[in-house]
Length: 67
Image (cartoon, rainbow, N blue to C red; front, side, top):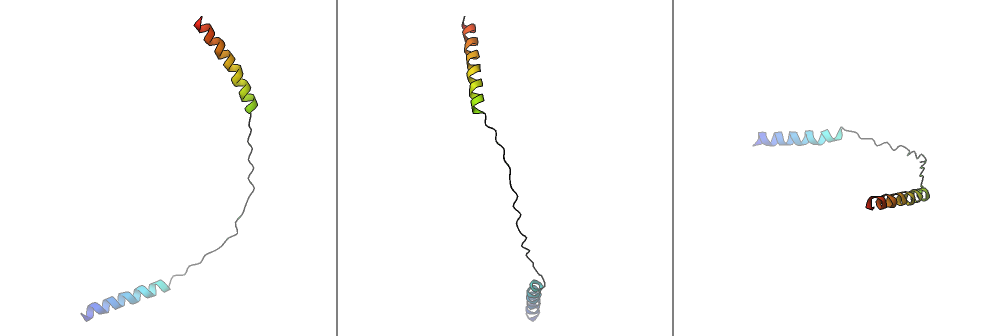
């Protein structure tokens, strides 16, 4: 029983002192913020004009097929 108690105490002492040997350092570096350039091209007017143009062509094609 004394032998088990000795090994348990030895293990606990080694466990406690093992935690004291490590060192931790946290470095806080400055955050660098860079500008972001976003270019968005919106061509809704041209897109609608093309849809109207092709709708006319599709309607004419459907009319030709029906005849």
